[in-house]
Length: 365
Ligand code: PHE
Image 1 (spheres, protein in one colour):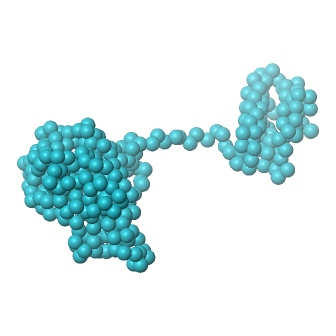
Image 2 (cartoon, helix red, strand yellow; image 1 turned 90 degrees about the horizontal axis):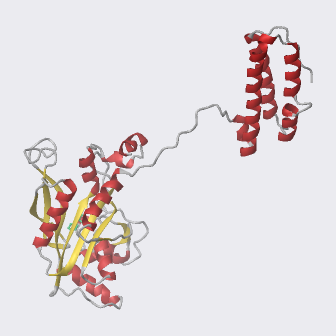
Image 3 (cartoon, helix red, strand yellow; image 1 turned 45 degrees about the horizontal axis):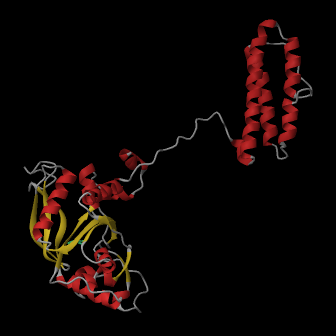
């Protein structure tokens, strides 16, 4: 190796000199035929290594006042070469040559619960503390569980493909076996009653699908929490008391509830439940359209026709028809999680919940 002689020991001259050495070392790493061991010997070898020769030559000829400046640059170069070797060792591949270890590290982001998952877990928690267990069911359902057993008449509008996303190529099957994306979590009521005998207290969170055009308040995919309570002597008062307590536990003890007559094929009587507006306390504001109330869920007493359908299917499965409508009764309810999460967190566009936008999601960390 020829060591160029230095006559000028100014900082600028030293920077240029070491800069060139730095570049030379980097180039040989990027060389096609780069060999780690010969590179190491070439630069760091104790006797014949470039660094040894350079330091010998430079320090011999340099004036005493330049020695510190040389030493600093010499150490930096040596350190860089060692780092390159270490990285090359770690990665042992192409990327090492392009890795700039002086760049700031890639920060690790800490994960956070999605606002929907969080809201769903909180609602489920309220019912678990009342002794409910968690039930789950499939998102791809059959017409039987999603509609037939829930007492939907054959031409009910909800059965229409306008609302229901159906799985293609099912036309050859009997209607009850055709696959579809569940439009609500209620089919899990049926699945649960086929598996278990009363008494039953279940809370069922899950994803549901409807063929709705997406806008600020609609999404073809959304979430529900379903409830089912079946035992002897279950009355509408139990339903009212349970939901009133649940709403107070979730939104705060100042919240009031009120029940309006409604209709669902699988409950009779049915009701829609409103809570006093959580924004204005019931005085009337833009959020509640000046009414003081916000509609939150559907509910009702399990229709005997549902128990009959369960019993019949249980018989077909070789199980006892234990849902005796003369002895047992029950209530069910279902609520939309997305709307509740949007209210709770002040989210104005449901699409944000499904956008996967980190800037949105980070706010819930
Ligand atoms: N499944 C109904 C819906 O999606 C809600 C509901 C559940 C109503 C249980 C009554 C009882 O609209």
